[in-house]
Image 1 (tube, rainbow, N blue to C red):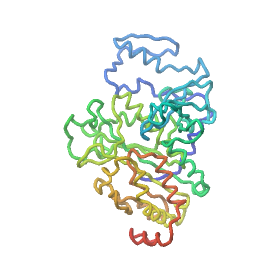
Image 2 (cartoon, rainbow, N blue to C red):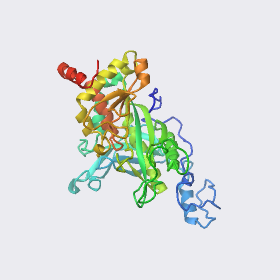
Image 3 (cartoon, rainbow, N blue to C red):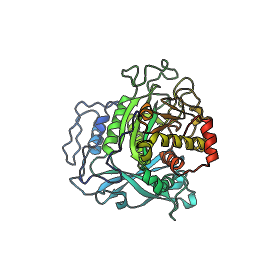
Image 4 (spheres, rainbow, N blue to C red):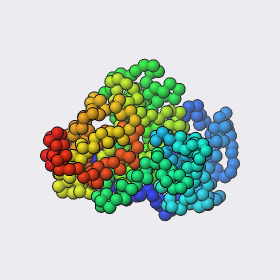
Length: 431
């Protein structure tokens, strides 16, 4: 992400006052993604409860009409898709329920439960896990007043279960020191698209390799860009949902893409990334493509996939902020091992010191240096204020964990003066 701008005034926790939203991203809009979708002679929706089939693809047409049906004129009820994180800490689960009327805030929604023994989060003899609604977004798949609901998980007694990382993050972001510094995050989510049956990158010859890296980054052309329709569909779906997505681009490895979310304030950053991942999973599901967040999906001379996290505080953004940034870098160097252990599974395969990464074992920082743990932009150095970029997080990192840890280390952690002096000397940092 080249620059951190001011956050949007829109906040995902509340919905606009109007009760009717724009058209959903309908099935027909995925036509370039779904195989064998012949539109010739397809029936047009009349807005009534009527199914008409005029082509040989009659089943597709009937399903499409039902999927695109707007039920708003017929009922005040809405569909809420409750979304939570499963037992692996990366898998996303969801189920739907009917709500009696449109809602504007998650506090208006009921708690719900699920079978935790089927997600690896509870034993069979005591399997009930409770979902607490935390953030709501417009549903780009169903449209109307329907919503996506980001939830976290608790025991029936009200204790957060071990895989609930949001609860701890919310505690850190509610600390007065953190609140007063208004932490901004801009997260760069990289991902790889895989062919469904062979689990090999999209656009690559099965069992073979394309030409070397170089022509694919931000490229156009059928021989250089693979999966653009998925990237564009995801971009529009996130904008529709109210996610603060700020851009997207093709990545260095063919079949790999990136999108950016932010600037987001505090806990909002994690909610937006998790919802954007869910939407991407749904789009790739419809496209018959597999989404991978593996930090090193292909071994060898190919770039890995990260989740670079841009970060700033109020003090960093004000005059004299570069000194505050350097003090934050010092703190980050002292807790390098703690951060690495929380920055994603399999990250050691990515952080090798090659392919625009720093070594996982060594902390480093630099201006405009993409081979460092922490990068500071040229504009930040020139202006004497701005933000830092933590390049260590893997593509499969938990954004609740990473954002909360950055805030904790830079705003709440207080190392000894002796530790600071030794660290400053070690990383050649004058504070």
